[in-house]
Length: 479
Image 1 (cartoon, one colour):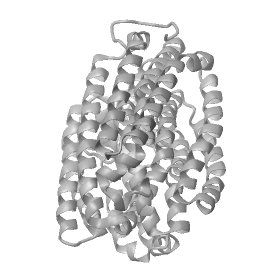
Image 2: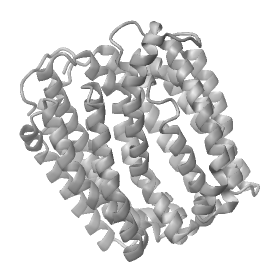
Image 3: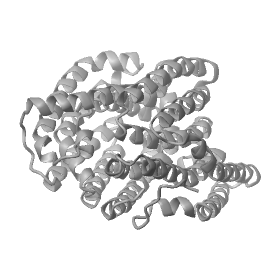
Image 4: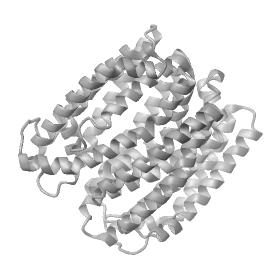
């Protein structure tokens, strides 16, 4: 796959943006977790689940059309904005009215005010959906980085200050809303096109036909992504949800660091070569291997060293979170792989296939989570997540990718080296956690070994790197 120079710059900016953002978020989350404790963290988790549920569908999936639109996006931008804002206002109203019933079902009625404040982010997100898509299409990740960093650090600063003065979970909601307002203003200023409303019937029909299947798939994606937290909160209670949320956030760190930067660039890059199936196949397999080369050792390191990582960073009171983290970190590897496949299939216009896969996934996942929660608590929920993903999704995505032109056999072969590297890093982390008593030294030793594994497997993956170079057109199998 030939990666345009703009895409390469965007990938660098996107990775830097995510790295700085996640580092800052990690530092802030440590402080907030130590100040608030598991129960207040659980209340915030209830609000976060509600917000993510609405955001998953608030613009009906139409903004992605701007990223892959083959013609000038100026023609559809006003219509996209109109659909996004109208839909987000509707969803905000419905969610606001349903909040008391939701918090009662989650076993935390006191979270109602926190949830309702967090929902203010929904119409703001709809307002800037077009601007965000335009920045992604034009590879303007430098500007997006500036907005994201302000969003993260401003929200974190406000949240920490309020948490230290006794605002509890509400401190996180206030910080998020204020930061979202500033973030939205910055995106509108940075947008390649001014904010405009409009309506073109022909464009609207095409946009809805494209977006609604993706929006439907996003609903199911949300159910997959947050049903574990819903089950933990409703079955095990708010305190258990606080422990689980911390474990989930730690396990999501590799996903954010590795998957999000690629997802900020991959759809646009794939869209530019969507009419060349051989280059699409080679590009996907090269990107898949390089993601696994880094993701597997990082995730197995977190899984193997879960206990010393949690107890050193967050304190002994948070030690139960390590029980879930061990399995959620392994599940993170599959999340990273599936998200790349999802973006590839979206560009290949397999929206309906994606929705079917997500439906199958959630139908298998929810009963497994309930059984896991009742039999094994937080750890049982995490194990259920991993088991369903490994059994159901591997088969479904392999079938879908094959039908979309990817040589699955070659994809498996190119994954052997990354898998071996991940196993080695995981074994090293387990040994370090078992043999070294001091938590800090155990985590450092395990992390150092994982980095060495990554360096070695990257050296063995030079063929995949060549496929992604902008000056080499490769239509052969990625080595």
